[in-house]
Amino acid sequence: MASPQAITVRPFHYSSTGKPTLFCGQRSLESLAREHGTPLYVYSADQIRQRFHLFQQSATTSRQTLICYAVKANSALAILQLLAAEGAGFDIVSGGELERVRRAAPEALGRVVFSGAGKTTEEIDLGIQAEILAFHVESEDELSLLAARAARLRRPARFSLRVNPDVFAQTHPYISTGLSEHKFGIPIAQARRIYRAAQAHRWLQPHGVSVHIGSQICSAEPFGAAIQRVARLVRQLAADGIVLQSVDAGGGLGIDYESPRAFDPAATVSAYRQAIEQGLGNLPVSLVLEPGRFLVAQAGALLTRVLYVKKNVRRTFVITDAGMNDLIRPALYEAYHEILPVAPRTGRTLPVDVVGPVCESGDFFARNRRMPPVLPGDLVAVLDSGAYGMAQSSNYNTRPRPAEVLVQGREARLIRRRESIADLFAPELLP
Ligand code: LLP
Image 1: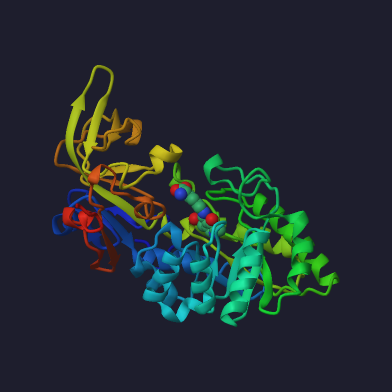
Image 2: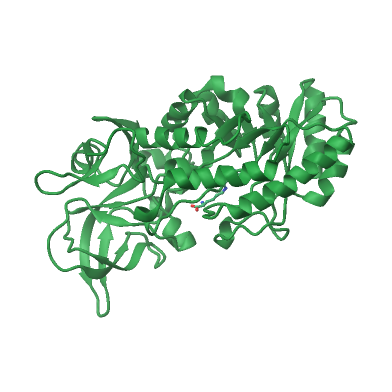
């Protein structure tokens, strides 16, 4: 029996007594489906806390570190509240996400960093008024606007330039951001000049420098390479008399979707932290980290019921009541998600396509995947869906979005009710 302290890769496991059935922590997924219906996102609060603590405890030096959870990965208010209670700050990319932090944990507004290449005037004003920790500025135009708004509101605005270090992140092209061909950040060679120019603005306060090279990065090396370049810039600026307090290394630490049994979360974070510390050397700065996926992906699953099993000439399709509008990662990035039957049947495994009801051939969760036999009415769990699952869901095909539950011990709390069809029509107007 695993001790409560054991580092788990996932909170989902089969019961060890009786007929095997899938649990999230101490709650059976069958009971959750009965109570809340399907499709249903199920998250483990304990697992999210455990991942957060892993990050917190991975320090190899006494450097002051703030972990700003990337809200975009899973922006459920209940999850933000849970993380804020553990001391998390937040990385946000919109006025909407700022409002989420305000509602879930107003005391954490001072621990917010605001990223994103296209902030509007309204969003900048909201951030200044909320006295967030820092704006991550991505262009000279944005810096001018920030200066103008801060002057107008007569409030100081702390900023870090987000630099583009021109480092290859070794990940899917859609989620790689640190090369000069990408729209993100300011070329690192221009940063020194821009920091110098910003000194003329009374209301602008240079706080630090930030970098984010991409997502689902499974090797520590690109992080180290990016931070080395950032550290060089911080030293050059110090020589110019501009002393930055903080380096923000962004997010991006990946998980192993395909072979979770070989994945060691503690060793992964520790190698990552070490690479960053090595890059920083003895630079006297605090550190901000912006993990999203690593904290929440493996804590969540999308629970869905099989509607039909259809055999065509070449393939067998398992059609579920969840679709690409509920979890778009396989369709958008050809992402792999392990799928487990909740109550596995005995019999030969067969290759099947697990697909949703949406009218697109891209609406699949798995193709040509060997699974034990499944029948209409069975439940299956699409694993590692806690990050960029619900957060990227939509109402495509006028489908109401799933409910979400957060499991803690034996308790499962509904943290978002299922949308009704009436909810979907609320903003629409007829003459
Ligand atoms: N900080 C910034 C500035 C970011 O843009 C992101 C993610 C993060 C932090 C968090 O990255 P993470 O630790 O989660 O890798 N939808 C895609 C991932 C998009 C990531 C966008 N930026 C997916 O499902 O794989």
